[in-house]
Length: 427
Ligand code: AMP
Ligand code: GLY
Image (cartoon, rainbow, N blue to C red; front, top):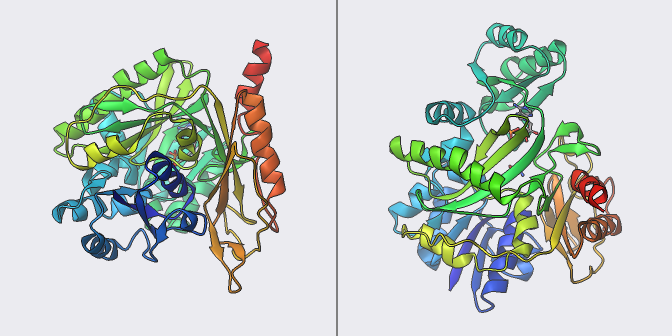
């Protein structure tokens, strides 16, 4: 079997690792990949947004399956382009991917479908946006509507902060065109949860829930990032809660997408806030999360490839549940100096060998001029440790983050702090 993976981060390294583990004879092709992925796959230097280049590659190589990581490729229509050429691809069409690429589209859809989410208003003019922020009252959330790699969101504690964020997006174009339209949104208080479901548009298979850590610094402080760490299982995500999320959030959303003539196939990621009034949607994504994928795949006991293949071929999904092993996974992200504002590239990395229960997935790494491993992106590694207890996994993940060296590295030593407190409280 030949599989093409599109992307070159920690999530795509985890895909490659998982597929090779499921089928040791698999032929893996990754565009563009990274030095970690290159130990498992043939890497081809085509970027994830070069849709014409990827179509050409796939028409030449004829993979039985293409799996897409990054949202940008989906928003640019890689799903449509591959399907036009009869190439099976796991991922939604550009029209369905708007559930992620346009927060305004997602809000309208949720309103129509009656899906619980924060109240929001869309604005393109500074004055109107500032007036809306005053009506909502602080704390208030200011969001760029377009794709901004998880960074186009400001949680303003005061009206002055809200004004600054609005000026940065609408007046100073800090997020380019992604911020030319903003949402002023009600602040939701609670704990976050990521729920992923595989879907053929109608049938669904939920994955185990995970909890991401979006803030840069310990105790969930500092700026928003693409994700600084994740863990699973999450004890508050009981089977009843996941069932409720599927019934009240996932199914109505998929139905609304079908009704709009843009059925969604692939992986639907519901980013939730567990509020006092129950789970409410923070955002949807149309692809696997990063770093949650690096957390979840090492816990997976059943094969993923057959389900991805079925969905990519447009066949009907086997919706029997996936099996998970009963251990704990904690992922710590090692980020470059200057992340998230302006990550510094080119710092030389020292990467010691890690124990078998620790998986070091490469995210932003590259080979320097002399073949040495160097930093090449904001998030450099995603380190997943598996343990028989949550505390064991947490300790091993943090220890490996200490052991890998490069100048200016940043990481959170408190990934899963809520869960650690719950486990401590339970004993
Ligand atoms: P998003 O890109 O919409 O997922 O937002 C990024 C992060 O900002 C989320 O994961 C939350 O941590 C936070 N956030 C976004 N919207 C809200 C909201 N309405 N209330 C509270 N936190 C939010
Ligand atoms: N972990 C957040 C994301 O993938 O968007």
